[in-house]
Image 1 (spheres, rainbow, N blue to C red):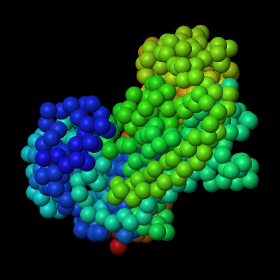
Image 2: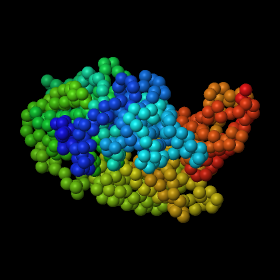
Image 3: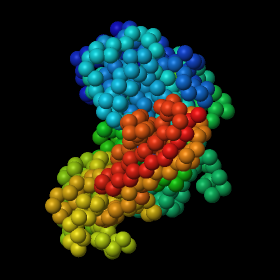
Image 4: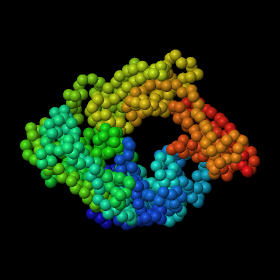
Length: 587
């Protein structure tokens, strides 16, 4: 039977595609969750990162378990199952193992240093058979079975990890919907209630004022600039609020983990709730729409706001009226209270007061899907959040799918000369809600006609944001270049004729190696390195790519005694190649 907690979780908070499953009771029943009470590592559970914490452009999809600053901690399967996927990359999760279990769940282990037993032998054989370090493959059921308690891997610091730890996830096997592992009775201690680090009040539009000004203010912690009589904030017109809060499992801990639930009460009535017990990966970029994004860009402080943008289709933030805008139709003082809880139920509360003036009727602030605020009528082209948008300009076009932007807006286009001299820069930006797009959109640019034919395959589309220039994977369609982008900015065509570089780190030509690995630094000027190989006396050998350090590392045990010819071959995304060899001695 479902406990009251899981019943409420299913009915109220979970997305429809999970709560509607006919099998949801068996998946979330207490008997099945108890089966994952076993920890994947035999250390006391201490978390360096919590589930659904806000990270750049995504929710954190699991929990980060501390390993005492060490690599090589043994990882055990928490239940019977089979290896369903292995993903190895220089970025992201690094070395990742997926185990599917017969109870309908899948467990995921990231940033591993190595795989153990038959899994490790499979990985080694696959890499050498396919001459590749990085790969991502799905495995048939029962091709590599595992038993509960079996040693499957060792923890590490691979991929985008900022330090040794185990990133651990529990997903629904059917659709990869990730779920907070703490709902599976993992044993841990957390006696510390969340910290409320800041509260802000925002005007809804140019007609609203806060303490007489049309600008946001931080009302907690109080300082001399925002203090008012009796600490009451004066409000005119609709407004919304935001909170910056975090949780720590022990006093004085360095990590500021995410909280489990945030609730805002207005005059004692629940007005807004934030809660993320589970999510689909296609929803993860919605974090940009539920936080004060400009503030996050400046300070990395994530104020979760009550305002709901209509293109944000998730259930994480539930605004119970007026799309999260607070509207008073009186001249009274009102009490607002935040209640913030961690997964253990430790709760922190903070109340503050606002006094409304020039009352606004809620109907005056109603929003329809066809509205276009007057602020948007000045320039650009209208873009509606739930409709497809296409724009065609000389030498440039864009195609934006529905629900790529979060609100009705104006898409601003302008053109300027690219300093590289090959083409023009085509600038795209939103006028009102300057948020990253929720999903990728397509751009196309005409190739320069003045280039020789033998150089056209070296062209790539780049996206320029300030000093940051990112080459986009580019498709050639005759004289038209096509790419997809996950950010707005300036788009242009650049030429890449420069091959990658490879430089020794810990060895010198004709001298003995220093250390247990042959290490080279690899770099590329624009389109990025897409393939790399190492050969020792003509035989392919595994070179592990570390994205954090931009290095390739080869086990020195692969060298034989005496002189070894070690060769590295690299290629970038447009086919520029380099090959360089050194003689390394082994005594």
